[in-house]
Image (cartoon, rainbow, N blue to C red; front, top):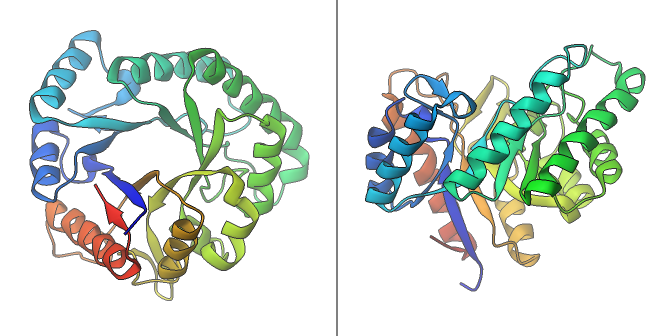
Length: 275
C-alpha cells in the first residue's frame, strides 16, 4: 500500500451542527471535512463570529478543512457576475481563515444544448475567478455538474485549457458523469487526468436513476481507483453521499456512514491506504 489518499466528506449531510458532523466523522476515522453548510448557513454566509466558533470546534476536535464547498458558479450564466466576484473574494478569505487550499466551484448553468452560444461568457467568468484564486494562492476545483457548461469531459477540457492554470483544476464527480451518460473511468478520466486534483465519491445508477454508494452503480469505481493508484494520486477523496433515494428509511448519519464504508471497502480491495 504505497498510495496514501485522504478521506474527507460533505458532512453537512449528517447535520447542520458542526459538532455532530465531527463526532460521526471521528468515529469513522476521518480527520477532514468539506465545509459547505453549518448552523443553517452556507460557508460564504458565515459571520466572523461564526467562523471563530467553527475554527475553535475544529481545532478542539483535531479536524482540518479540505475544501470550501462554495456555490460559486451554480447560477445561471445570464445572472449578474459581480456578486460572484464578491463571493469569490469571500471564499478566498474563508479558505485562508480555515487553512484550506481548495475552493469548490461550478461552471454556470446554461440553456440546454447551447454550449457554443455561451462558451465565451463562461470562459470569461472562469478566467476571472481563476485570477482571483491565483492572487489568493488557492486552487479552484471545478465540479462537473449536470446542467452547467462543464457537464461533459470535452466541455470540462474547454474550461481547464482556457484557464491554463494550476489554480483551476477539476473535482472529478463520477456520479454526475453517469447522470450524463458518460463512463467516468474509461471515458472521462483518460481525457481529464492531467487536471484531476480532487475526487468526489458519488456513484449513480441509470435504472433506476439515483445516487448510490461507491461501487454500487455505474461509476466504474474499481477501475477509477486503480487508475488513480497507477497515476500516483495522493489527494482528497470527498464522500458526497446523496443517498436519500437509495436508503430512504435510514437516518442522515446512517447514510453517510454507509457511503464511507462503501468507499473504504473499495480502497481495501484496491490496496490503497487512506487517512
